[in-house]
Image 1 (tube, rainbow, N blue to C red):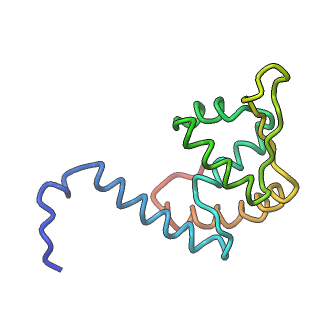
Image 2: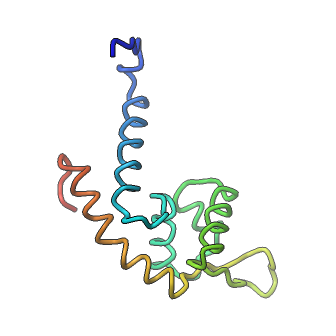
Image 3: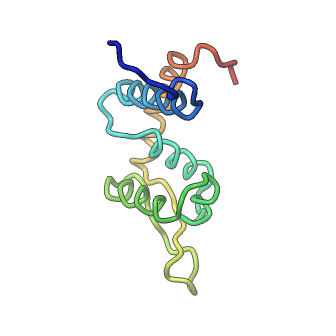
Length: 128
């Protein structure tokens, strides 16, 4: 098509967003029908290796708003992948997060799929 992009093609943010869309689409296609977003995968990975952190601490760690983290945790909890446990007998609003058995099983199932997705989408990046 002869669509005029004007200054968009000179903007790093525009190219990053286009790359993100490409990554997210391939991620979804790579997950073998498991309904999981890259953000949800990131959250369950962090919970798996840092059990007991609070929602607030986790939100700070990944640089997102606490309300956004709460919404992600709500979805994961409704799918029985994550469990909220009171983290303090004093503060009833503070919850420690742990993966359920189903969450752990799903994470182990998804990791090789995610690594394959990464290989396909990032040929220009060094191996970590």
